[in-house]
Image (cartoon, rainbow over all chains, first blue to last red; front, side, top):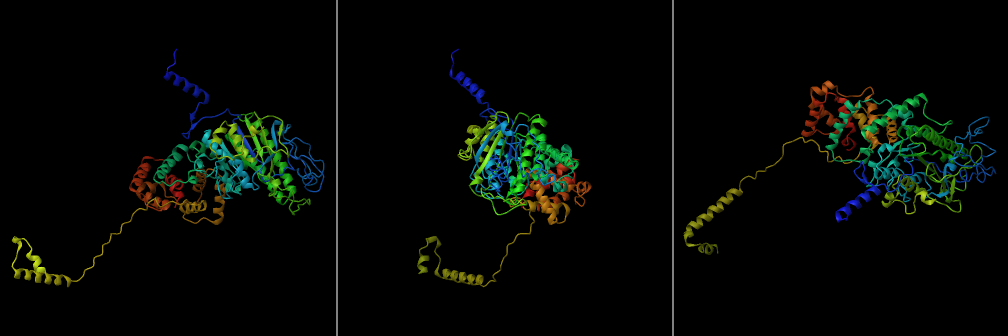
Length: 446
Length: 179
């Protein structure tokens, strides 16, 4: 059949449609996924609080930092290496404090289940600015504490360009200090609250204060009470033209709000009965945060979950506490990974975990000594820029180590394009022109 | 001279000279008469009229502390303690969706003893008065006629709507976030 102009256009349009198949997002925007998804769930573990390479991937334990030539790996759920053989202080207490190491949760460390970026770079030496880089993918972090990110966060990119609902994106914080609650969305005019993530700081939300001011909520009937209440609210809002982002919320639908309130109710019940999912050892605030993160994952099965920790910051004044907290968070992350694979069928084998600290710590100690006469470390010198990163899960090259001390590969800003890559919208996100010029997907760095 | 000027008038308007002189004297006398009258002062004023304040000048978002303090005062007719203010501030900060946080906090306050909300009977007995009070309490203004009409009709046509739900909707509204 001879092809006239009309037939040609029809055929071309159909072909183009078959290639990229755009669709309309709930927000009304046109979306075209650029590449296939690598996984349907991502858990980003911000192994934060300032972590030195020396005690983590370098596995030096006390060697070089405290004039004790005792090396060893105290993070054997994450890293492949033998533990220290002397001066064990990081475990649980037996006859002496911390002398019993916590048994490994994973028989196969995460390093072997994915790719270890042995030497990456953090562009910021502070906690909040370091976290900002990780969630914004941009190193231009000029804002200080008490200010929201200036560039869109990964939550906003995913919600705007991949069409996720508010309950598909979660940020779980270790607390409400250091401006952590501000990281769930930016103040960028094209993004903002409308595309923000849900956030809980579980130690507050489900802690003593939460019980006092949140747990005793009246149960309004969704249809006969909440619906008319919202109708009146809508009328009142329509009479008022001034709208602020903070007042409008992040766009949870009424069904999503009910779902979240159901989760909160469940958490208060489980907390009261002591049945919150938790690892064998749960004696730090990071592990409490991690336990509630498991609950968030099980309830919502989010596409993206970001969880932030901070206990390692004890290193300023107590090297012993720093070691204990490192060991415990390794235990917690091992538990989290195991929980996803064995307790959440919807996420098992379909989740990529990304893990990295927000910054490192100094090479030289400060003068503060702890109970073992060991020096503390701050975070301000070039050693603070040294961090590691890790990806594990399906489609991630297995048992691979990339880079070394003399050949750093990757930076903390890579997190955003990497997650965008996993969800198939890397190019769309890059095209917004708001990422750091040097940031790129860790998959592309391999 | 003026005389010459008058002489230039067209013929039909010419007057004898003595008439003209009389007219000038009359004019001068009349002017003196007017200039000697008392000078009355008039003040123009408008009658006092109470206007409902507009929402247009509410353009500053309340801080979280302001919101909590005012909410507590509106619901309990009492000032919140510093400790409680700090605690509610913290739990609201611990929830990312501020609209949801407000909803949960208000739901908890509604469950407390001492909350001061008119009974449903009082509301339905005089809906207009209830609306006037509610608008003044939460929005610090009177409702417009359109607002009164809609809300009155909504309450009348929805038997499930209680005074508590009306208060809830006001406390959740956008306007209540501003001053």
